[in-house]
Every structure is written in structure tokens, then in C-alpha cells.
Image (cartoon, rainbow, N blue to C red; front, side, top):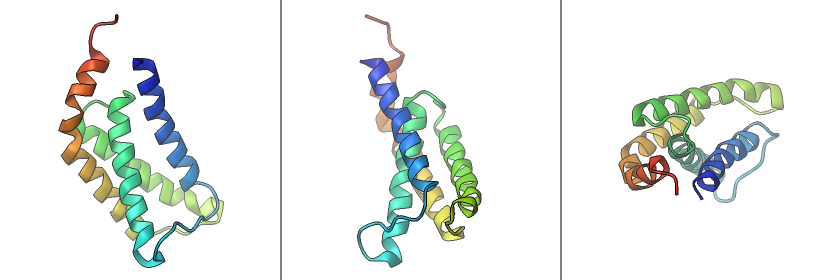
Length: 118
């Protein structure tokens, strides 16, 4: 079960990276703000998944790594026919910050993941 949870967390990260690095997809909702909400939610998920996977257990380290991933994605989007956006990076950072803020709720799961093997 632990392996399944870790693989699911890695799948979230990989799936979101694929979505961000493929040609433009218009998310549902009013385009003016819906894209930023999706960025925020995506990087909230990435920040929490980085800790669950375990790529980075430290809360601040996971949030900073998520922001670095967001910056790298914004640069790489030029090569896949998408536009760079500082506001997307701001939304990514807001999602990472939200992930940092609520990540203490993951402590029971992280303790279980790191616990003794059955």
C-alpha cells in the first residue's frame, strides 16, 4: 500500500508536468482567472506530492522545489507552442505556498509511510 501511495504521488507530478508541457489546453471556466486557479491547484498538488513521493520531505524545500519546477515549466513552454507568463509563475508560487501551509496535515500519512514495514 505504501508503494501505491508513493506511485500515485509521483503520477500526480508527472501528469501535471505532461499537461503543462503539451500544446495549450483551455481549462473550463472564465479564461481570465480559471487558468490561474488551475495553476494554484496544480502546484498545491505538486508541493504535497513531492513530500508524499518522497522526493522532498521538508515542507519549505518541497515548496521551493515546486516553485523552481514552475519556473522551469514557464521557460520550457516556449518550446511547445505556449506562452510564458509571470502571472502563471505567481499562481504556481501561491499554490506552493498553500501546499507549504497545509502540509502539516500530511504528518499522519508521512509517519505511516515512514513507519515499520508489515
